[in-house]
Image (tube, rainbow, N blue to C red):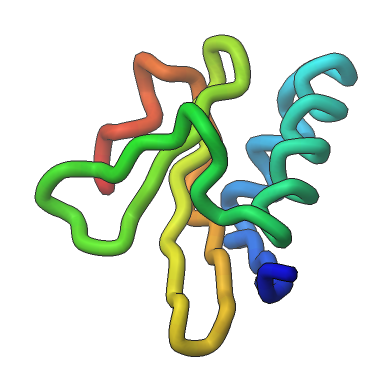
Length: 89
C-alpha cells in the first residue's frame, strides 16, 4: 500500500478553480483527490528547469504542483489554461 500524501492548494489556485465552469471544477477536484494517493499519475510530466515540480492535464487546464516526498506533501502552485499556466512560474 502506498503512502497517502497531503494536498495543499495555494490561495491563487483556489480562486482559479472557482473561475472555471462546474464541469472543469469537478474534473479538477477529482484529479486533486487522486494526487493524494498517487502524486505522479499516468500522463503527468515533470517541468524542466524547476526541480520537483510536475504538471497534469485536465482538458485545456493544467495543474502545476510540487511534490515533497520527505514529508508526503503535494503543494498545488497554479491552475490555469494551458496558454497562461507557465507564465511567471
